[in-house]
Length: 264
Image (cartoon, rainbow, N blue to C red; front, side):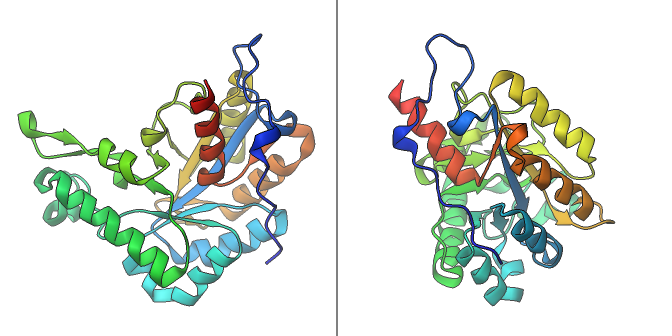
């Protein structure tokens, strides 16, 4: 795999332009893009990594420990190559409205349960995969435990332990001047065409926004997938200087946004 690009030096960047309503990204970029993939699926290793290497793009992988255990050495290599490995809990609890999650339902969980899920998953990634963990992806994009009057958001738990909590199937890109990094919007990128993905980026350019794409398999045929040819075109577009896009991990761009928000 080719060497990943060096992290940008935030300190010398002028982040906010007081004469403009638009966020000022580094090096003349008009928008930021992060590519994120959930569940440590084999196609991410088999089909995605060669594409990222060819374009010099760093991606974020929200790993599920049971899946990552199947190919531990390869996931260690992903981290060593400069990609981000993020937290996606130990057991992937979602609403019991999904039949497959009925016995692992968020409705039956507590805040303490979720904190344990998060801390155990971080420990796995650090000890078994050799990566430092700084961001989290909400399973199924769902952020509450319990039911009815006893339902509670676990966003504050995420905020205590992570620099960014990425959502899923949200309706807009992130406004870096305003967004809550503990519940940053994630755009469902599965099954979208390159034209549709580019449309999201072009709209973000108009507002100086940050698009976090969230996908699963990198394959031509799966229920949740980004086609390899779509990923290839997306990476090529984002690294072309003429398109003025900063593409990097959720952690790297999130840190820049956090620094800017704290300064104002």
